[in-house]
Length: 125
Image (cartoon, rainbow, N blue to C red; front, side, top):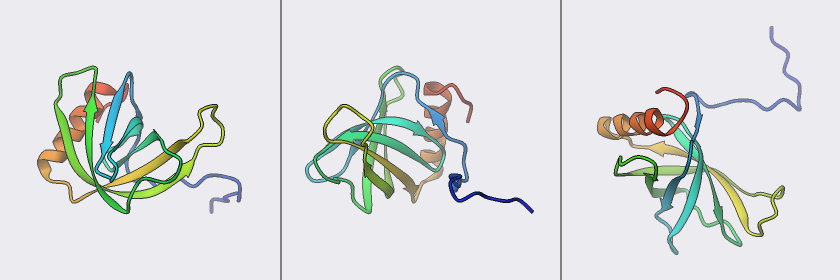
């Protein structure tokens, strides 16, 4: 039986996550529209940072994902906000971190996400 310490973070993600190499952006379908920088991505979701004085993400929203290093086009998908927190260990006022889970993915969207991971991260999808 495995013992888990209270201070140990519990990984609940089903898919491996891969950090982006270079710049990859996500445009949030929010009002007002917001853009963020992708930190990492998996086949099930992504983490991003954005600037705002308060939480700007919604429970369910559309995302446009764009990798600037490769001509992969953009990918529009639906995602659900899992967490959205102020980043206190930064020198930038208003920096926030957010994690989202992809929702209602089609087979084509899944292939496109795998292509983003293969082309824009050090990992393999």
